[in-house]
Image (tube, rainbow, N blue to C red; front, side, top):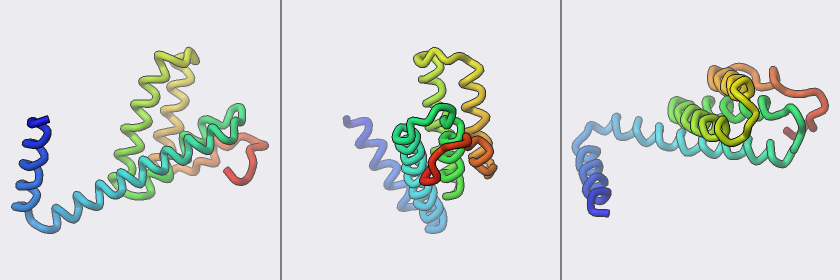
Length: 128
């Protein structure tokens, strides 16, 4: 607890002594990262609600695309969340390395600005 308090106070002191534009850029990055995390959650929530076979790659690409459109912070959040999810799922889901590679390809496609509809399966309801 004391260590975290010291780190927080040191960070605050360093930010206070830094030039103003750097603080503003850091604030924008954090705001974009939080928004990107929300975009990733929204895509996951929609994927669970849709419960549509073969649509997971679309939702991976859409979540990453939406997050990356927010800026560098959103793209960073999308990469961290996607990598953590795939690392966790590869050991748990049992779908194999091929599915993980395909998910990561959809994640990269979305983050790079590619149209998520490339992965949209026929018959998926329009609201998604």
